[in-house]
Structures are given as structure tokens and as C-alpha cells.
Length: 107
Image (cartoon, rainbow, N blue to C red; front, side, top):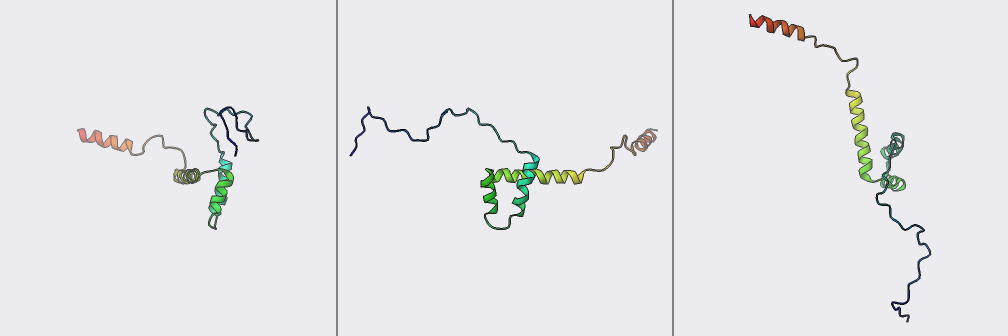
């Protein structure tokens, strides 16, 4: 039986980090649009149970990140297809007629 006293120190593990300092604030990951498209394609095509989980583990992405990317994609598509074509009208075509009728009601 080995008894350790306060004088004895336990041996250090072989994998002691060289710089044990912890970064005060970790750097946030920034995802490009191309990376998001590259991840969303196989996620949408996943057919077997666990395929999406494997993809997320391999890429180090959380479920909520994938869900937010899907929401971003849907809102971008909705916005793209809901925009009217052509330039904005410079004036309302009925404004002149409304002004004429208002003027007529005063008299």
C-alpha cells in the first residue's frame, strides 16, 4: 500500500498542455453561404435514421444551427419570390384623380 503525504506529488500525466491558458472569449465560427449550402444538401437528402446526426457530429454543428440555416433559406426564398418586378411607380396614378375629387367636394 502506498501512502501519499503532503510532501509527495502525484506524477503528471503525459499529455500536459504546453499552454494551459484558457482563452477569455472563444472565437465564434463564421459560416459562408457556400458552406451552409454544402451542409444543407445532404441534410435534406438524408433518408435513414441517424444520417443527419452523423453529419452534424462530423461537422461539429448543433441541431439549432441547422434549423436556423433552414429558416434563413426559407425566408430568403419567400422574399425572392414575393418581390414585384419593375421599378417603383414615381407617383400614385389615382392621386391626381383623388385630388380633383377633393377639390370638387369643397365647392
